[in-house]
Length: 204
Image (tube, rainbow, N blue to C red; front, side, top):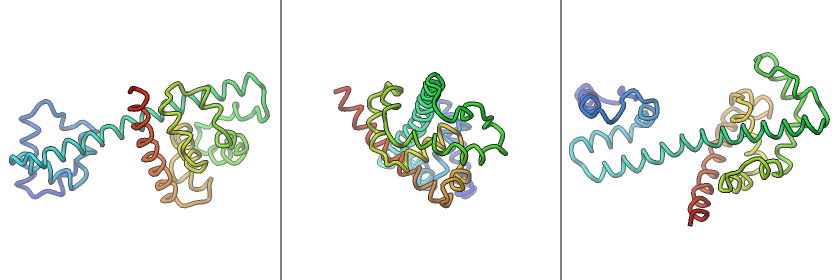
């Protein structure tokens, strides 16, 4: 929580609020990250003073924030498991580039070599959606995934499946880290919107 945005009196008000309301964990990282935004702090102060309209805005914003975090964790774990399943099937089929499975990518020094040497294998992720159809059991997530562009899929997989940092992905793709961040952000926003609508349709 960025209390540097507040003056001393406002900071005391916020701290007292969290100390008195034990249902809201002050040190919870999700809560802290939510209140890193100045607008959320302003709404909180106003809500503490009795402004119901801003309290509703605050609650609505937090629900979106919480869903975004849970959604990112969800797609990260799901896509990672799908990729593992894909690799297992590759191993069984003894397809080309068997060294793909033997490289130790946990060492930072090997990352660049791994990416460049095995980019043809990585392209198999983006050339079609068959492996996701076989590996992702969540229909809503699958529909959200297939609507992404190949470039968006590429960044999502490199980031959440292979755990590469934006700067490493930027080097591999020969684009700026900011371009990687923007591409990933747009992909997540797009997936979140499609996923939410599909969940409603499927459950309905």
